[in-house]
Image 1 (tube, chains in turn blue, red):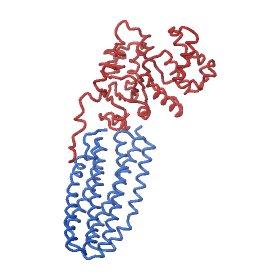
Image 2 (cartoon, chains in turn green, red):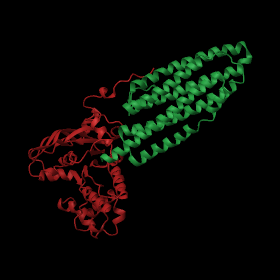
Image 3 (cartoon, helix red, strand yellow):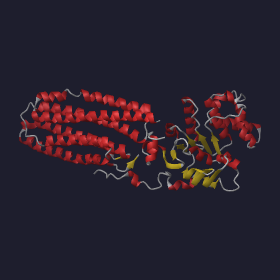
Length: 225
Length: 278
């Protein structure tokens, strides 16, 4: 019995390790995408555009690991919730990687126009989104529901900034129609960053489910399994 | 607004883990055990067990070897009476009647509360005679055709009829392990019990035969109340509506099966289910 458990725990820890690795990659790519938008550095933009492969490979590998753990160990209770959460977090992280590519695509177009304005709010959104991702994964590793809850609370800040950016850019576009194209790209980027925050929120919700079996999605508190 | 992170465990009522049934259903209880203590001589094998079981549900008892789950199962039809030095305190009510009160007809109790054991134990007689045995000794049928009817009905209920109808008078010992176990179930059902106690009914069977027994349990709960002891947690998860987890003679947690296996309330249950002890 003891031996079987140790083997399973090792597998579970390995799964967690791979998920963290993927999280780290996703964070890096979000950061690089936003930086490339600000720096207008085409080489940096292209590194993001064509650098999705490691995340995609991990996406498949992690799914396979979860699938095998289900099939071979029939986990229950907290172990069951941990693996179900891992499957979902995996999907969220893969989407974050895709969104980093979407930001780089917008950055590439944006770089062909003169800058609309100095970018302040978008890098700030990038920092918040990245921090949310980081904290959500930290909460996952430490099984820390307080930190997960803090991630959920951060989402409002991101939404607020997105609305602010939209209003500001609308103003630019109304005053000077030549800014419409690049401004739309910035609006798109803010939208992508807001989505990244949503994925971090999903991860935080999964952490709360994994630790306390409480489903807090869609603002339905206190619905234990 | 995000919900506050209230600790789930603190919200749970103190006794909720022991009685997952809504209060309104308390009147229709099939089995109601209150403060049961069981002694093997001086040794207390069960500590203050209270559990309420509704009719027509499957309840699984799980726990490590020696935790008292089989002992507790056998208190439900007084099968422990035959063990020297065994003694019971507390109440075990079946349909509201305490089966341990003075003057109770133990044979009648066991007719009402049938039992199937880990190892199938058919009598060295024909298939027909195995099922007819309880009916004959209890004189439960008045003529031959009624007897034959009850035997067929029981074999049908045990999902064995199609396989044996053409060889009813051959020896039961010629049947496969899985068939023998279903024959024992048919034999238990023939005297029309209300409750069926099953002590590891599939642990000696191969996966296919196990699957048949599990499917049978699912079908039988429409008519019977079933309590099953199993070492196989996946089996408990598959067949039961409620699960009771025993540890060192105590009932640690009694809960809806889907809740128990996804989010148990007690740390001990969690540790057992995830293989951290046991």
